[in-house]
Image (cartoon, rainbow, N blue to C red; front, side, top):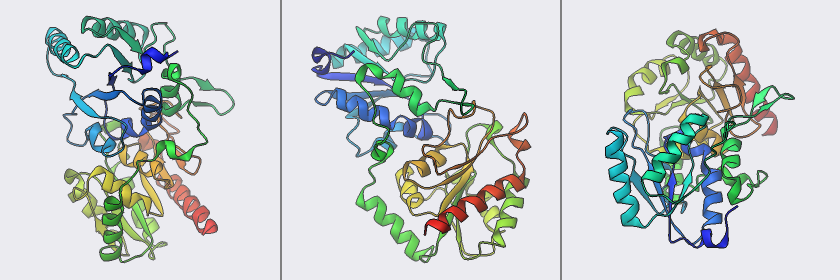
Length: 347
């Protein structure tokens, strides 16, 4: 457990790699770290992903008071260079304690990481299990689902205390008034104050891509029934042309915001959306973090449950076969109707 002496450290290093989805699922953990080390300077050692569809962690944590500064993790250098660079950083910043806030690791990977950071000069590491079971995903036989990454990360940080899962604010992004105002301005001028559905075709992994023909068939089908809704696409600039082609199939008003918003501005737009439709992706986790119901199309990239969006209001479609392409258009449309029907009943 964390002691009073631990809490009084002046500088704390937090090791956390990833992009949008990885950061959103870590928000409860970041809040727990702040609670455990309220007076420490919290510095995150993180990566700047090479993939242009990924986003740096600091862009999401901006203005949230969960981290004071960020240090780039030297991904693309040799092991010796990494040790040399990190030893210098750790010594200059007087880091003695580190929160190991990484994804699930095997026994061998855990020992490798432990020895690596010890060589770099860290004296105490919190959140890294060296036992063979590590912090692997637990399976719930009642639900036939694995625990979520939210919960697994909470167990990883159990030495810091417990997370109150009844507190809905633990996954919030603390959107600023400027970010919300920009969203409201777009809704007023471009969306013309109509109810709207948000889609995103983005994914970093080809195996998580549902397929162009499926997207076209789905949009053509629901376009006939939801002409009172505007269809909005969000994502990065490279997804603009493909999103534009899909929007041309919609019979009502459309708005293409790909490449036009920051990550947090996209979250602000999602906050006002009726539903979100998309792959297991960063935008899906953003939608969940602001309380918007998701129709989430999953691949078998992860075990069922591990990376599901936070909350009980979502419609999850997991492949019945070996590939995401085994998910039928009809099954997705059925879940869209169900999600919109539930929302209509609550209105």
